[in-house]
Amino acid sequence: MLNENNLKRVEELKRRYPTTQALTLPVLWMVQEQEGYVSEASMQEVAELLNVTFAHVLGVVTFYTMFHTKPVGRHHIEVCTNVSCMLRGSEKIMSHLEHRLGVKCGETTPDKKVTLNETECLGACGYAPMLAIGEAYHEHLTPDKVDRLLEGLS
Amino acid sequence: MMLPPSHPDQATKWENVILPPTKDLHKIDVYRQGGGYGALKKALAMKPEEVIEEVKRSNLRGRGGACFPTGLKWSFMPKAGTKAKYLCVNGDESEPGTFKDRQIFEFNPHLLIEGTLIACWAMGITAAYIYIRGEYGKWIRMLERALEDAYSNRLVGENILDSGFTTQIYIHKGAGAYICGEESSLMNSIEGDRGYPRVKPPFPAQVGLWGCPTTINNVETIANVPVIIERGAAWYAGVGSPKHPGPLLVGVSGHVNQPGVYEMPTGVPLLEIIHKWSGGVPGHKGIKAVIPGGSSTMVLRGEALEGVRMDADSLKAAGSSVGTAGLIVMDEDTDLIAVITRIAKFYYHESCGQCTPCREGTGWLWKLLTRFEAGEARMSDVALLMDVANNIEGNTICALGDAAAWPVQSMLRQFRDEFERRTVDRPDDAPVSA
Ligand SMILES: Cc1cc2nc3c(=O)[nH]c(=O)nc-3n(C[C@H](O)[C@H](O)[C@H](O)COP(=O)(O)O)c2cc1C
Ligand code: FES
Image (tube, rainbow over all chains, first blue to last red; front, side):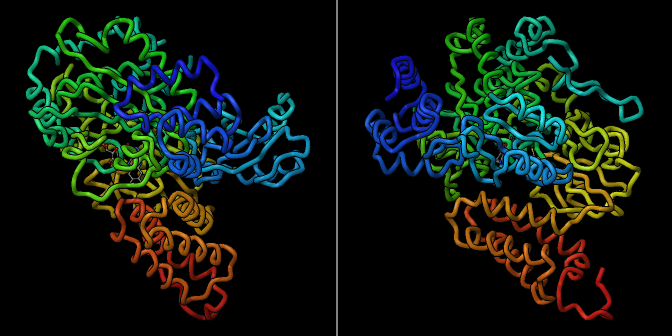
């Protein structure tokens, strides 16, 4: 259920677009920021709020890779493995993380603390290799820097 | 806050205008003290047609990848009519090797806002959407801050600078899909739908966002507009290469000592960009290959870079294109098969699945390439790979299919020997083709 503040934001957003369907992405972002992921119940709620079908909302959620339909670990680490990062050793960063976390790329640690994934280019190619934890970019990585990052995760 | 990288002494002389090294330029007061929003004032005193004419005369060409003349694009917008008109500013920036628009959000967001306002005035538009990729949360907040300041300074919204002109600017956050950088998918994404490209024609200037006339321009393109208005089309047209002039944000990545985004006039030799601007190749190694303008542009051999310049014509003559000016440098020890396999995987992942040649073809390309990568391919796979790429190219609704095919085709043409070496059935005595 969207909280009151977010419902207010929805009303404001309605003034920015000529249709309510256009609010699908902004509202899904609110849901995900609030709940951590987008559940089916939330999709149903978004559909009612925006007067669109559930199928529409589901279609949108599954099209965009940043919407999660399941809860992810508290920290979502995404290592860019695309070309510029690869040329600067992203493979080494990934295997170091797999080794340190004891999980493979795509998995979540048993304590649900960290989910590890690879990702496509995040627009940090000149500062490679890089990873993102949530919205925060960490650039010019070395295995040492990765260790310090992991130590800093609560 | 950090400053953008400064200009090296030994290279082509250039004083930055898109990313000037002014401290705290992202703050509206600093921006205005340096003359910011003066171009807007000047534009509002001109007739809209005059602004379009000025942009036409400047020869500004789109920085989003296709180099389309901006003034011409603007002139396609209907002048009269009762329908709403829209501007979409494309900040999806997802082409691997491209990280330039991000610098504008961070270091000079008001230049982008000012350019957006001038574009709206020129085309009679009352609402602009700046579409930014979802991963750029930090940069979205930076631009939001700047936009709030512009609103509270009454530079955006009702009756801008008492001119009677009213226009709104909104930021729309993407959610992770390379395809949404394609202009018609971008419009679907703003409309709240999946980012499927639309069939053209009709073109956006006739039928765009919500069926209304729409212009789509890249962030960097729009950031050039205040510069043109302020300094004049004649000045702008004289910067860099005459047919593709102006300042250009070149993003250098891969095997160079100082990767980063550098502002320079168009037409700087690639070798100067690599050796002077970006500090050369680590370990003084040779250059095996470069991708000049983002991952979808054709690869060039290192030995063939002499005389090639960073502009549309020179790169076209060399068999590639300027794209987003994201220059990826690969040294002599690079495993190009690994590189092309990773690039192919990207396009396979990002194909929206609407067109069969792209949906299926990108997957085949990737699977075939993994065979080469593992050294399990057969000689006949070399021709098959080219065949699959050729069957994608030109057969899809949008250019993602071409973007997937070009790197593979060019890699095969330029480095066929590397592919042949990874096959199981290449006769030992067979000459390796060059
Ligand atoms: C698959 C695909 C992805 C694209 N991604 C972007 C992008 O991220 N940013 C961008 O400005 N243009 C992108 N484009 C180009 C746009 O369709 C469009 O040409 C451009 O935004 C127009 O702006 P300009 O004329 O100012 O260059 C992409 C095109 C394709 C086919
Ligand atoms: S390739 Fe990794 S950020 Fe662009």
